[in-house]
Image (tube, rainbow, N blue to C red; front, top):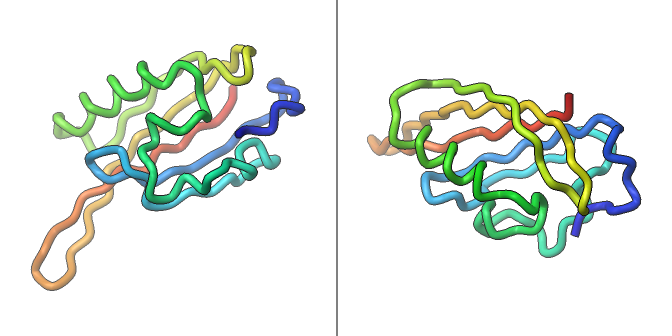
Length: 115
């Protein structure tokens, strides 16, 4: 669950690292505790199935298009539905490539900030 007592006008700043399937590899609530009480911990769960944003389908569509494309960064503004409130946000998707043992892994950083 997210902190529903949060006034959504406050700044939100969350960072996720997702694999190509949308599984959360890393999570950080770098702002004011907006999503620090997510239960269960989102790591290991599909980002689009956790209950952070009620309208996650738009993010899923953008994420899937980003994964299929070749751009290294994509920025867009959207309105997220959070606890029945609307939150104007800027989302940045960034590709991360890692090499180890001659294998190359790709993940995507999802940086979400209220505007």
